Amino acid sequence: MHWPQNRFYSPIRMIIIPLMFILAFPSRSTAQLEHKLFTSNLILETKFHYGFIYAQHLELQLFNSHFPAFEFSVEQLTYGRQSWERAYNYPILGVAFLYTPLGSNPVLGSAFALMPFINFPLYKTNTFTFGFRFALGAGYLTKKFDRITNYKDIAIGSHFNFAINLMLEARYRLSEYFTLTAGISLQHFSNGSIKTPNYGLNVPLINLGLAYRPVRDNKDIGDRYFAPTEAFSTTLRNSIEFNFGIALGYKNMTSELGQNFLVYHLYENTFFQVSRKSKFGMGLDLSYDGSHKKILEMNGINKTSPVDIMRPGLNAAYELMIGKLGFIVNLGFYLSGKERSNGPMYEKFSFQYVFARNFFANVMLKVHFGRADYIGWGLGYKFDVFYGKKTIK
Image (cartoon, rainbow, N blue to C red):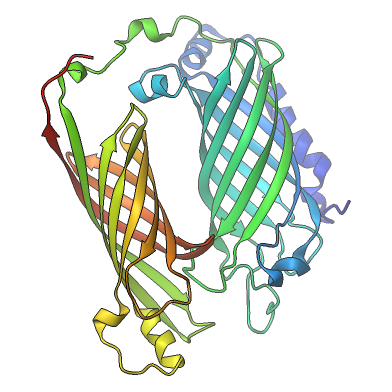
């Protein structure tokens, strides 16, 4: 096993320092502090990870190695103050800080990540919880691609990247204050092709952790203080939801095509709500990517019109609702377009937040078979069309 040489990031210190910070909190505190922590349900947790870089492209096999990762997180257990918390069986919200040396290859350097997350319980008893954690935040890699000084690092073209973590986790409550945790996860770093090259880094990991509650569980908070449904929700009619949006993307392709490009994206999603959590439907896309014209010219196709560059698409859509925030997945295929190097299929992963009545902001990642194409930022408008008779459920 290879450990990083820098003493500041030695594995012993990365474990002991967070543990000392956790244990420094007294189990009994003043009345004022205890009251505040009762309502916040604060949890402090440290994890030790061990994994490797998965070479999703042959060019990344030179980075194969095994290495540790270290995580410290601040968490809060929800108690149903919002209706979506009750719908998801009281998930854990938190922020995690992750460090990993990324192995022994000096080309990659080290990685840091700060990731807000939500941990959804899938199975839960008084002492045991099995759940799924989704984390999304910012990552910093100490090394990146450079034509002269670091030309072998074809994985990442920028220091700052998106950091995504998907984890299946088991939590066993040892006592009123301590919980043992273990899980498997996938850590991903990518800049969404804002700057190329951008193969991205995929790191499968296993982990073992210890969570600590500075103050005992508040058992006085529960569902009995809240209505089981929202006001007037039993009298609503069935509805179809229409979402219209526009997004703007940016692609730095100076290392491949010698210039930067903008991507214009129009889309529409039609949804049918099937539960308190889920919506299913279909969508339409229309995008114009300036880099496609350049690629066609390099392949000897010089006579192109804007219609040749536009790519309309048809897709299946799903939305997971978390209050005003929606996580949307689209899986589709292109109907036309001359540039076909990415294949006929595409995927979109979006976060959509309703910030005013019927208006939403959106951030979208466009993907082709697991390889990020671009990130789009945009705005949109949504409305419902009601049908059928009023019902009482």
